[in-house]
Image 1 (spheres, rainbow, N blue to C red):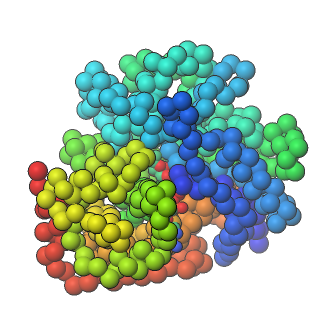
Image 2: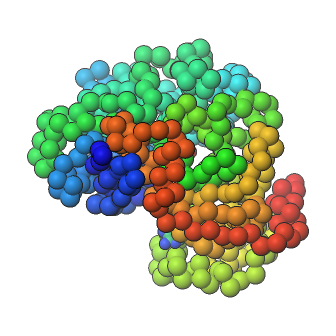
Image 3: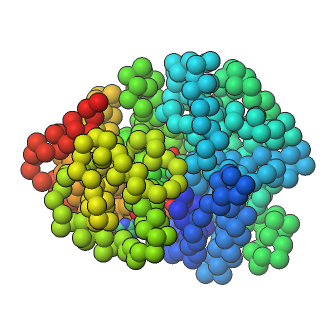
Length: 488
Ligand code: ADP
Ligand code: LRH
């Protein structure tokens, strides 16, 4: 039987990796060949992604992958959403891509919505109103002057794909996060694009996951040791879209794609574009195979990551494992906050911001790092509880199990808290769900595996280690804590 050997490039907001996947009808084997930090750079007052460094790391990883595997049948790239590079008419990158946590979009969304109307935007795009959506970044960009010189806007994974193959496309799962797509037609919303003053010709043609983008050109890899000629396949290029492919779920499941963000929701056949859905802040991102990812962005382990970074900058030894062990010994739900408070979005002193919010809300102020970690874990679990319950109610779904995938699925304290808070069993893993979804979509495009998402997920369930957490018997404490967080 056929076996595909593919390279999956997965660029998360905190780290990137290149993994070789060997995929066949009854086989899914992964071997990580390169992992690298993804550290933003603030320069002249703007927070940027270091895309050239990421590109170099990707090339290094592809070389390692080719050496490890001998030969690769294809490569595919996924990354975080919404951000983009601008190309001029000769294909040169204009400026350095800006990070979605940069403050340039401040106030833009409110201006746009007072002009165009939230209903108009949501009924077509179905996307949660987040200030950093590509739509608002492009409006902010208009003020900077670069947009006039630009010929194409390429979202991050499409930009790397372009650098490898020369193809300029917009892969649809990631393009949906721009909030410029008509989610029902899976096509750009030309009228909305025009109303935002964005030139339609800036936006490339859309492709669905599984499309062959092209082959790695000799020019792209000159002097890097990477062999040219390798096919590059468009995968679910939004990391969350690839992660959802990699969730070993069946009917009645909700999921948390748990990395820097926690993306909490369900997979649907079609969008839910009601006013209630809009007000509850649910998104309808496009998924692989015509699906919709109905979910809400919860601020996620960013709170923990940025706290650790703050403590380390202050010269403290902050070891995640040790802190989680210590936090596990503290009483739960002593202090809880809404993790989605907009003040948490930018980089900076996270412990100070969490303490300030606790103070304002009359919650006991967490003092030690372990107390803060406990507060973050409990607050995330509470946000999952509310989101799963709302998603079920808004879609009329009966949810019976919660899957947790991504780096955060290794956090046993969080997984158990999530099971207890939601009141459902949690199935944790795989850790590298995005890599797996990326590799599976490539392998299917190459003909090494067949079938629908259910078949791909069955392969994940058969081959990957998963950990189950049973919920503690229901108690009122989570409902009480939810009321504490939500009372105004
Ligand atoms: P992203 O794709 O957004 O970069 P990942 O899926 O790689 O994120 O997840 C990163 C997060 O996973 C970290 O913020 C950290 O909290 C968590 N994590 C990573 N390793 C462990 C571990 N061994 N135990 C608990 N949590 C972990
Ligand atoms: C997770 C993610 C998420 C987006 C955010 C910008 O990495 O792609 O789905 O909302 O980054």
